[in-house]
Image 1 (tube, rainbow, N blue to C red):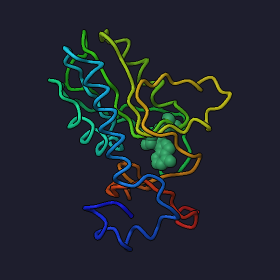
Image 2: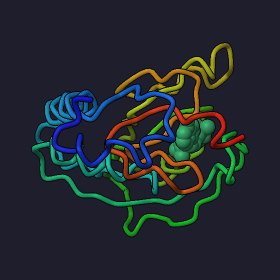
Image 3: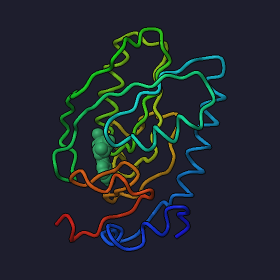
Length: 195
Ligand code: IMP
């Protein structure tokens, strides 16, 4: 693995629950910096609100905001679209709303992964009703194949890190039953862990 300085910590242990690592820490870091540079350019002379969707976005939001050289502010929303399983329920609930009004603000929703797209579709609609100056999406992963041919195929996310294979992935914020979020890399869980 090329996950310096984490490599030693992640030999064995929880790492053994993965069938394979698909994005290592260095690969993620370079991509996040690249997205940060794009946002810095695109929002020059603006003070965007970077809106992290809890809990999965926390590592991405932390790394991404450090790669954006602008007077941005940060807020969080918590939504729930999944139960404890690995399939989308299609039901989106707001568990924690924003602390402040977004009227007139340039909002960038920061999300870990777009799967069915239901969560972001719902969120974007809700936020647009609150009169922001603009709403864009930054997602680290996009499971495009899942939405092929469906109404939600094009989520119109302005910033996407990687296209994600149609597998259940964990790490870098993504969880299975609340675990694995702390892994600095993203990998595919061994099927026997969730079957
Ligand atoms: P969507 O509404 O189907 O797009 O689901 C988005 C949410 O589902 C994400 O924010 C994740 O919390 C969760 N999710 C989707 N796919 C995965 C996965 O492969 N691993 C872990 N969580 C996932």
